[in-house]
Image (cartoon, helix red, strand yellow):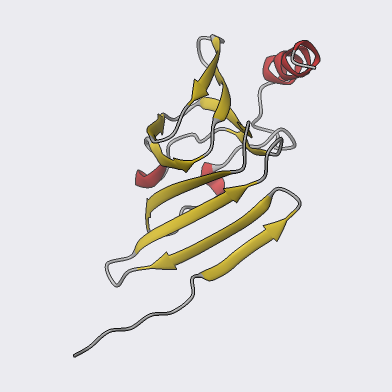
Length: 143
C-alpha cells in the first residue's frame, strides 16, 4: 500500500498569521492562508495577466471576513461581509483588502506560480492616485 503524509510547506509567517502551500505534479499551486482576527491581507489588485488571477478564487473555510473592494475602472466601492463557508471570486482590476473579523482560514487554488507583474500594490507606480485617496477615506471611516 502506498500512502504518503507530510507537513505542508510554510511559505510565510508574519504578524497576520501563516501561509502554507503545496504543488501538484500538474503545476497546480495551493495556498492555505491562516489570518488572525483584525489582520489584513491583500491590499492590491491584479491586472489579470495570469490565469489564476482572472478571477482570483478563495474558499473561506473558517472564520468571517470583511472585504473592501474598489473597481479601478468605474471607481465603484463596496464592502462585503463573508460568512464561512463561502467561495470568493475577485476579478482583475478590483482592488481588494481582506480583513479577518475572526481567526480565519482561506484556501486559494492557483494554476502554477503567478508573476509579480500581476500584483499592483500602493507603492507601485501603476497604482492609481484616486485609489490612494479613496483608501485613506475608507480607512478613516472604518475606525
